[in-house]
Image (cartoon, rainbow, N blue to C red; front, side):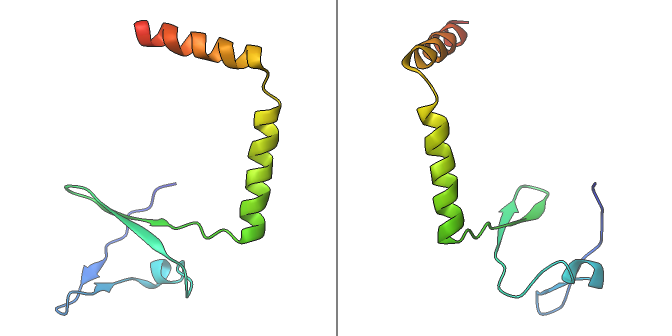
Length: 85
């Protein structure tokens, strides 16, 4: 769902966030700011704990181990076919 809310810039150059926006942010969170020609957007930076990162790595490793050499060869063939087009 997309919501459009007006944010003001103070004379000091600070963003004045309305309550419905400021309550979304939590102390200590980090956000990436993406700047395009006519848009500025915020994206929350994912802060994984070491345990979460380890679990993700183990999950990815188990998925990779499930792929056979034949499947890898087939994927490579498909990609090459697509690149020729």
